[in-house]
Amino acid sequence: MLKIVLVVLLAFLVQYVFKTLLMFDVHKRIYNHRPGQCRKIEGPVHGSEDITIVDEKNIAFITSGLVYLNDDPSRATWKGQIFLYDLTKRTYKAESIPILNLEDEEGFHPHGISHWIKKDGTIRLFMVVHSKVFKHSIVILDFDETKRQLNHVRTVRDEKFVRPNDVVATGDESFLVSNDGGAQTVLGNAVEMFTGFWKGGLVYYDGKISQYLLENTVANGIILSRDRKTLFVSHINQETIGVFAWDQKKISIKKLSEIETLTGCDNFYIDKQDNLWSGCHPILKDAVGHLGDAGDQSLFAPSQVLRFKFSKDLKSAEMVEVFSDDGRFTSASAIAVGFDDGKQLLIGTVFRDLTHCDIDVPLDF
Image 1 (spheres, rainbow, N blue to C red):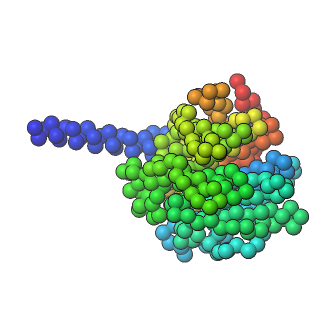
Image 2: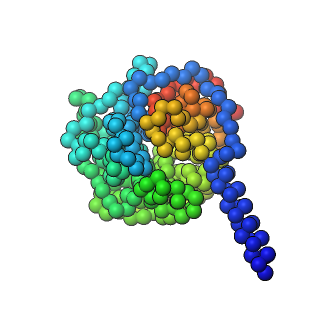
Image 3: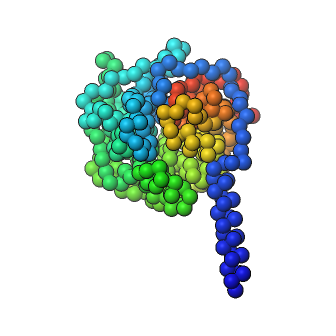
């Protein structure tokens, strides 16, 4: 009997070790390739973690200066910023936009970002913000085009924003927010990763109250389709993308499919042709090491850009790898934005600079 118990325990141990090794991508390697000439954008140096594109103005807003799972606030010496990048000009320079009347300027370290166009044409930005001591909020800002500044509208805090990662605006005051876990420390996050007892999920906030839509999972990057009927959720720990039907009136989601990516997709962008773009972390063990010490310039992690063309029933997707780098040129890609009818590409990174590439190769086969 004892032998049987030992064999069963050994089998479980072997299975656990094997799954853990797969999760950390120890079996993978990266082959560098670019779709055309790629250049660094002057401006962001402490990250370009997420990007939202305002099609009506041909501009991009970029978050920079992320603080994440920070056990030592004194190490976060950089400033949180929002950059503006003009997509119609090839200046390769992003402009830091002043932010007025923040509740906590020193504690402003933006993460995920989204936008909403109000009825009067005002561009309203929604962003996940962490403080140096890793407290969380959603900050809402209005863009003053004339003065080229951002004005603070509101800071939203809620007990359900346990570890917010990304946000999707659904109205003037409402939004969806993803939690990529529940732990607030590096050690606690390691426990979540190794045990699989995740405390993240998806939350909807209607402007006054919040409610869970998904619980006890990992929700990283999120985005709504252009017709706002389909929600895409990155389950980065499982290397999958969850596809859900979204009902704004009923505030409900229904799972349609789950796409296996075999890579850790981070944030999303949907282009005018309804293609889904993502900056991904192809080797998780390297990403974890890099993200564990944002200030160490000697640490880097591989980058990968994927474009997904979904079938009409959203049950499958054709995937194209547009860009791949071992991390020496572009480290830890977090977001990819294909624009100019697929002729140009922006690649944002978690803690480093911003890359702008030409796409000189066909992506449809």
